[in-house]
Image 1 (cartoon, rainbow, N blue to C red):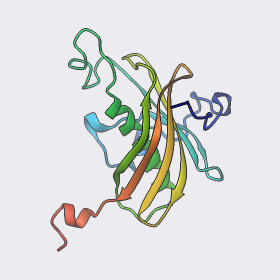
Image 2 (image 1 turned 120 degrees about the vertical axis):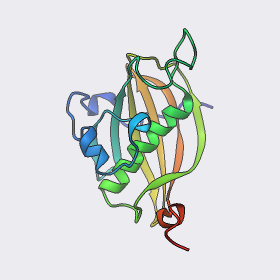
Image 3 (image 1 turned 45 degrees about the vertical axis):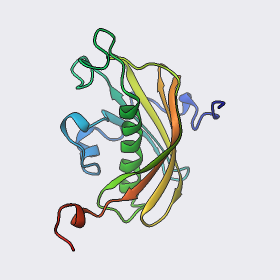
Image 4 (image 1 turned 45 degrees about the horizontal axis):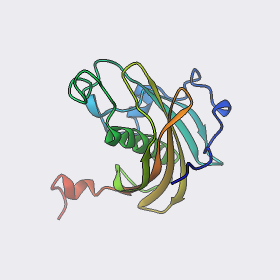
Length: 169
């Protein structure tokens, strides 16, 4: 499968211009502790429905010790989780979905094109393609040093929190 054109040129965003830090991201995303996969959001464009965030990876990330011992590589599923967190943050902040929490509905056409290691800044560019009341479709591209390392399409769904928590029949 050929690489898609860039969602957004690298020159269109500034990784040093923080639009939302971890505390602001927490206002919209419920993930905490090891599952928080965003350091900051550095670009939001409501008109084009594009958002850029990143994660600064460290030797202390939970996956480093075991994936792979002596050769730590960021797991692909965590790359996809980071992309989902950018999409969730953006859709909730822009009030594009009627959702208390956005969860995975699916992944399509995901390709891993490079390795990501501790010390890297993992940049996620996401564009919402379709938004309905309880579902979104988003394309994403992930980069390290402007090199494409992961791309795909994700589906987000509104999670029925009351049912999950047993507060609703």
